[in-house]
Length: 368
Image (cartoon, rainbow, N blue to C red):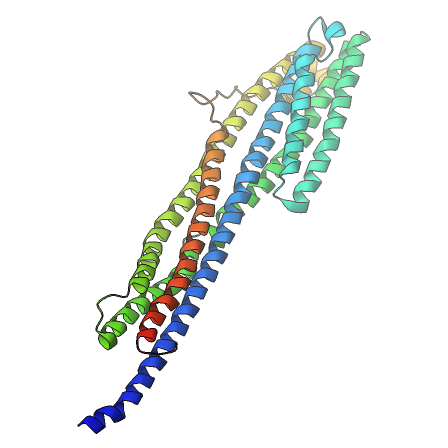
């Protein structure tokens, strides 16, 4: 009986030692995969959220601000040039301020342009068109100053027509380009719920292997708990439990930020339509006075600029861009914190696993 037991001893030792080494390798490899997958997943999500935070809000709202400023500049110029004091005031300070604001807004779009080469081309075109529009207004101003009101009115109409048929059309194109880039980021792989599976599957496999290793050590060494492996298991369990919740919170903040950003854009558009209706009404009055015999001298020009009813702004205060900006910034910050926490926890797991297994190996002189 004793000889059989002694004969089986080395085999048992060899089998246990080999099992410990294999488990150490598998646990280490899985931990490395979890660390790599988590880093790649969260880095991609963070970059996407950060790009939306630093580009989306500024680009989309700056385009809307540029459109509103141009429409307000046009309305201000029409009102000033049609006034009896136009010789002294010209297109007016309000016009100059709004044109400057429109140019500054487009410069902001250029700084954070998310639409690539297409967006840059549209911005260059709009920059040149603002110069052309300003030149048309200056010509109208010179005509009014030279007591040629009819020519001044015609040139004012040309400027307004250029604004509506050219500049605002290009601004709409720029808006579509920037919002397409935003939508692409919001629906990218890195901001979808499926991305979490990229990390969750190896993390669950690691958790299962850690639990199985605890049971294996309990059977072989009659110890209820391995502290190092127990702590590693708790860390992985905490990550598996918390990661979906935090990732969902990040995605929710991104989605809400995009929704609020669209609301800000709609509010700006409503203000723009109201201001444009005011300007077109003033232009209609100018043309009507300059062309008393519309059929003979102006044709369909007067009726062509007759504005629709002014669009009332939405009830309550206009939405601010700070709301979506705060949400997108919060999402980016949460993603960054989650990435740091996941990396730190996984590194701790990588250190705890060999410590826990070698603790048992050393007790029986196993070199794992």
